[in-house]
Length: 210
Image (cartoon, rainbow, N blue to C red):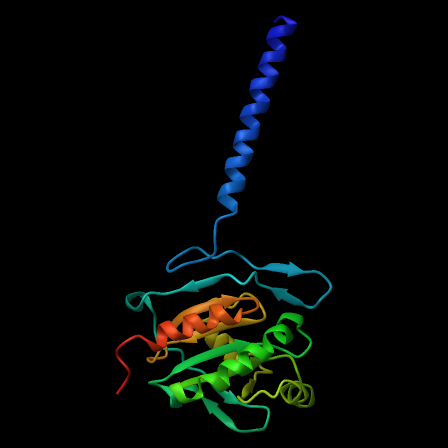
């Protein structure tokens, strides 16, 4: 093979390799989840003690939602909590613990959501399997949290939720429809506008449970 031909072959090979890399990058950089879309996996955050999601959102059409979530436990004040008591209303579940940076970052938005939507039949409930009572209550006082959190030290509440919808990051926020079925999920910090839009969509659905 002549030097000129070898040079031409090298240029063509390099060009084809570049095109393949561009195509692969484009496939991997697709947008966030929409209804029925594939999840983008969470990333491990080294040295910070939590697994962080990327804020990706997934929603489920009404016809594709599974069984109602059965979730109960005891909150950090020692009172029983059972989301079955809220059937017919919209429920927002949020996993958290006090030392989790994205949990603290989204706390004020969750508090505002709970206050703003209280008269619309929306209930928020936290799930915390990490903190002791003192740590959890100090967090709730710091952020003026108006809703309860299950003290899930044995992991049973999270296991019940995980059996219905993958909970792959802390925080994870799950929106349940009026029948108690999973309508949407956010992995990682829940941006206020995104979460409110999801709640509004579910509130706007017909068919409240009688």
